Amino acid sequence: MIGIVLGTRPEIIKMSPVIRECERRGIDYFILHSGQHYSYEMDRVFFEELDLPEPNYSLDVGSGTHAAQTATIMTGVEDVLVKESPEIVLVQGDTNTVMAAAVAASKLQIRVGHIEAGLRSFNRRMPEEINRVLTDHISDYLFAPTETARGNLLAEGIPERKICVTGNTVVDAVYQNLDISRRKVDVLRDLDLAPREYFLVTAHRQENVDNRARLKEILKGLDRVQKEFSLPIVFPVHPRTEKRIQELGIGTDGLNLTKPFGFLEFLQLESQAKVVLTDSGGVQEETCVLGVPCATMRYDTERPETLEIGSNILVGADSRRILEGVRSATAWKSGWQNPYGDGIAGKMIIMVCAAARPQ
Ligand code: UD1
Ligand code: UDP
Image 1: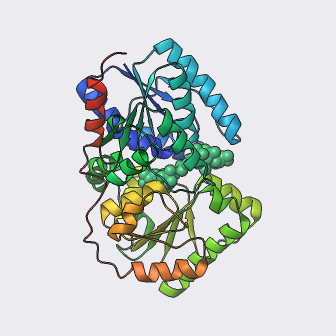
Image 2: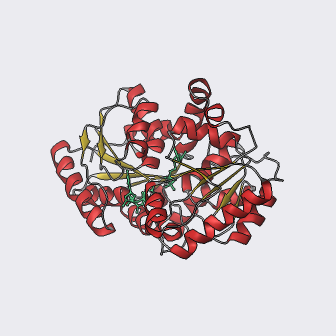
């Protein structure tokens, strides 16, 4: 049996192809939801839109400090794993849910499969970097999305036999949902937007939005973009960011702030945007797959492939660089090759898991 653990928006989206493959092959599996994300638009909407089965277990851990949240997830995951005794636990990405579940499973001597293994920003000030490194080093199956990620793992001494380059399940998720999105939603019409005549923004990284000066500088950068291009800026606001904007009383005039969108709506907005500005990991990948220029409001990225092929530019949290980055990105031609695989990562991952011998 496979235990699939997830807990946040990107995990639900990027695990969806894996869950679909388990369903298609009639694999014995269960879904354990940590409840790290719980607001409707960060959680349930994805189960509904992506037609995913209900989680078999929901821990409802909610928000908290890193240690409190991680510890609560570990305790809850341990209980379920003791009861279910799966042969393998699959986790995806770099959140507290991922690291907590990986630690709990490995100490019960249950094998851990880490999807999206080997990503490195080489910036240990990011909580996600700590989660990635720890998870990779206690995992038994490392599903690396690219050769670069594989190289990072080898450089840290992880044995080659544990690593399998699969591509990123984000490609599967985009391919599986783009047509559905075109058929089911028309968010450009709903928001009165014309293709390639708006910018799309997301921002939620702790190091960006929990720092007043950085958040203000990002908003100033967006304002400069708005003034220069006179085009709408659509900004679905992550709950962390919404909380900070309110607490800090920062002005957001001129920006089209909305609640987070469902995946079908967001995918459509991404695919038609002039440029996407973001600090999200998944959004850097999706824009690359969709052929849309991306300006990443960070100083480093664990997705260097996007910089190398020219779909992405790092603009930091600096209003001048944000404007200059957007200026240059508007001129890019989107003929780049997607480095994240051909949309069969979910199939490959389940094939490897199904072939694993019982311990
Ligand atoms: C988490 C992940 C981050 C990932 C992001 C995806 C960690 C350390 N961080 O960050 O890597 O990129 O999810 O979006 O695991 N909140 C709500 N409703 C929710 C969830 C959160 O209101 O459904 C608010 C709460 O005020 C909470 C804050 O957002 O305190 C932050 O949530 P948390 O899950 O701690 O971190 P994220 O910023 O979402
Ligand atoms: N996303 C979404 N609605 C939104 C913003 C983002 O569905 O309003 C999706 C996006 O398509 C991507 C994922 O959320 O698949 C990225 O999640 P997030 O940025 O929260 O986390 P990260 O990838 O940085 O860990």
